[in-house]
Image (tube, rainbow, N blue to C red; front, side, top):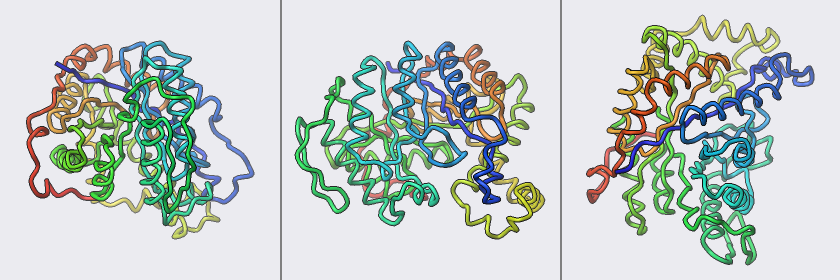
Amino acid sequence: MTTLETGVVLHPIAKDWDRYFEKDLGRGNRYQSDFQILKEFVSLAQTAEHFGYDFAFAPEHHVSPYGLSVNPLQVMTYLAGRTRRLNFGTSIVVLPWWNPLRVAEELSLLDNFAPDRKKLIGVGRGVAPFEYAAMGIPYDDRRERHDEAIDIIRLALTQESSSYDGKVFQIPEVTLRPRPVTPNLVDSLLIAATSDETLIEGGKRGLGLIYSGQKPGNITRGDVMMLNRERAAAGFAPTQPVILVWMMCCRSSQQARERMAQAIGHVLFDLTNNYAQAVWDGFDRNAGYRSYVDQMQSSASEADLIVVERFLDKQVCGTPEQCLEQIRAIQEATGARNISFQIQYGDLTHDEALANLTLLATQAMDELHTIPTDVPEWMLEPVEGDPLKVGG
């Protein structure tokens, strides 16, 4: 019997959106230094290992306060030297920003330095236009870059030598160095998909699924079914997803709910600031960032509050006992093999993040690691026609 793996999602976020909004980057960061944020990031990874979490995940972002982890594979290679048994994940590597051979090289290098650690390598396209502009990558061909990159990485990891002649990438015959130590390292690749098209293309290429828990379990199950249908057609066995959720674990359910709601309100600002900066142009930027925040908060409607409540309902929130039962429910609904937790987000402090991960671990980790994750029967059944219609 296989059992559930757990992890923490480490997303180091700075607070200096004001100088971006006000177009005054040159004045510098007036808040906590990037150095201190990254120091706390490493501390969270080491604490998670101490308390029995299996994985640490890191994202990729550039020139933005929304995530100082600019190279998650480099971060994981560093953490390999700062930990003893922690396994590593990415959430995600944004493939269109990379030469795909570099991704294969860095993944293989991590595998050579830490051959005994498991890897779960989430990959995806990314959607923030200003990050694309900063990287000098055309936004409109990101799907072609993404799909070709997956093909190239798969070839490099599985073939002694390979070449590629695509629309975006042309690579002469090469051999990847260093060669991977893990024979099936390519199976660590997971697609981060929010659309049917991405699920289909990922399944055709034999990728697994990494998913941020923002849909109900039955819809996530539909995503898994769609991916596995395409995997089966391409000759691959069914795969179980990796689910990433936001978590708030406290001594009382009311405290957890109220604190998480407050923090998610700040997350919504981070998401808007990073992914939808066109919104800024509807405000007087000369009035300052504080004025923008005040106007956004004062215009929040009942519908906006309902959106936050519905979002919370799909996460893990409550006492350790309640969190444990919610995690069980997520696993049963999705067939997940790994459920990992975003422990610091919005305005949560480092101390709150430590308390968050520590309380769950000390009160529920042993039971979490007994949750069975054998492949469910519905995942083994042949899929005829279209599965559940999924949005995206």
